Length: 254
Image 1 (cartoon, rainbow, N blue to C red):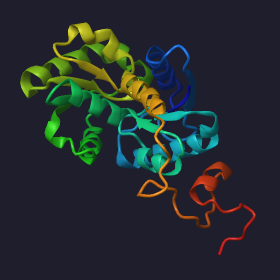
Image 2: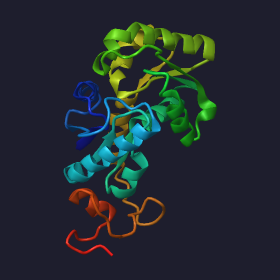
Image 3: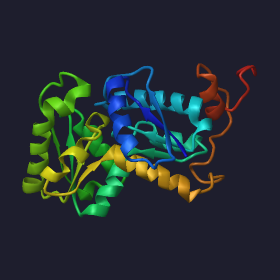
Image 4: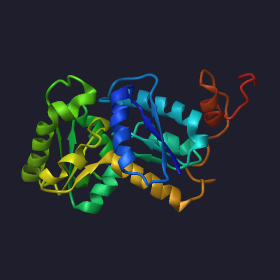
């Protein structure tokens, strides 16, 4: 089994964190291909940044999906997830959706522990899009500027643990989600210090991606996730144009 793991942000340090945790979450025969966005931002906090990350993910997926069995979008908020599912003939898993579904299997209400205050509005919208706002106990986030996105765990680890404990004690959380690729691997290292199950989205996404490949569900030929209609397109890379427009590149636009 071969999995394409996409970091929709430009930080190579974060990609290494994702890879370290992903390698702990796969079977011995599963292979990983790591990919980092070629353009965009160091980490996503806003709706606009999420759209950019989604486009970067679509480009990477279009160029590499044929050599893989499934794709993982490794950023909280799952930039481009539904669009990728619409154009890809293989399973696509987002770490947010995977973490949310796993959290619901562990308890009644969950809290999200995040790396910045600005990110909260977008996270709430993502959770609501899955119909799970009623299960959300709280979002608690760091309120200090991040010195280095690849070292958040080192620089803010104790603060993140304290936010998680407060979410349990004060907000009634049954489960904690440590949100965002910069926190990949933290749940594994601090779980014995937390009073409730603590979930890592990368772990959840890799496990679920392997399960989806095992299920071998057919690619839809009807419904809203069937292939988009053929139409002219311009300014896209050839790999993405072949999936989105499916019109020969030498055919004139009309």
